[in-house]
Length: 75
Image 1 (tube, rainbow, N blue to C red):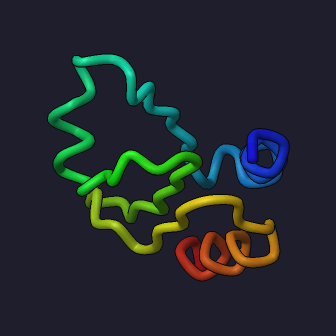
Image 2: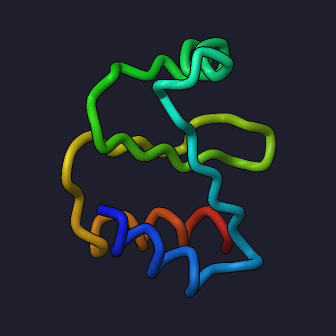
């Protein structure tokens, strides 16, 4: 998933801010609970400007499923 996400980041920066969360870091537990993170990896969230979860993908997800959601979010 890393090459897909990094490719999207290169394409959509600076319109979209990509943030990576270390789920093994105890300091991120509050944020994880707020997202209702299930613990499955990879786990990708598309958040709106207000932090609302717009879309969520669990497990391997092809770029052609992620990119349309990004395009819709920034349009």
